[in-house]
Image (cartoon, rainbow, N blue to C red):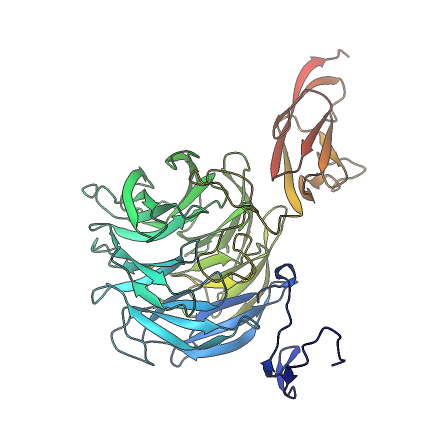
Length: 550
């Protein structure tokens, strides 16, 4: 390496002899170079439990930044008797694993949460740091860990038995910002017999929505979403402030996710085969049912795009050879429209049973673990949300392989759009997302503001043409001369730029039309302008006003 005038002469490097992927690794005895936060990127990794026929392992996989495909495992460590789920801290320094089982193994006790260190350079997993017991009684399974948006608290669901209506509760742990060590706090949330299935926080972490399953009408939380207030100092929940039905009891409400911009919340119901959309009141946080989409068969996992553009669902039983779905989210009210479908790897046969899905922090890729242990990578179309499979690995671990199982999760690390760069714990959340209902709080200023925003255009039943200046949107009916050239209904434009949209009427001879722009655009002229200071959505409507005679 050539000498640099800004190099700290006190530092020294050992000979580089270790090959790690495309890099040579060396030992640095000391150094004082400084890399600006704007130039730093965290490793983009997937972390999942692995089952290759022997004892279960915890593995890391590197995300290809271009395609989204995963490398072979870059590191593996031993785990406890029956690990269920894994999730990294948003700082990328720690990984939390929930453990069920019945015996001590590899230093991990049953009914506990274990903490593993992560390399901030290559994302690889270090040794076991600590293990902390949950309150789960014997026979319950700790699962579905979720980190509070501030990074200060970890929440773990203790899963009971759906068939016997024996619900569990939720444990809350304080997170040590230096080592990731956990301390079980005195704040537990119980369903009093209803089974918690998942937690969704608003972006600032001031409100929590808990999804409960149940099969009776006697418990007021069965098959409902409950809203709680969250104490930012302790992580304690208070409430519920309000509840709303997710489905009829017995339909197994199974998964929940929330729009990071605070407009909508989504629930997957396993037996009624539906994904329900709930609008979020920006002032109170209360939910209102906006309708549902039929999703066959058995939607058991939901994932949300980090920027609030798309929602993804994974199904326990593929229908028409499909078990991963994508939906385009309406920028105005959060309702969903089908955007695409795909099939995960399903190595060795058809997938029937537990399944999990998530998107990585930068929103480019989605990942599924299916009931056959396939870990499949999907590229996400940034305009439509459509999924394209880019590869599948075998050997991922799926808890409770028989029947519908219980909810579980795995996850990825990387530069987050809402996590403060170079932060570890208790960080300010940056405001890169469009404004929305965020619990009444004001997002902090963003030190790394977005460079572009997303503009989408839809049309009413009389379908004409719309183009943009600068170029980027070209949307309208096919023509004989150009049968495929008018399909781009959305695109990114520079932040704070001005975009002009201009309409041309439908190609029907003899018709005359009034033009109306609504949504983020307004007016009745041929063209409308919109300033891209956030994601925007415009509706173009043509209304026929005259038909000429022959």
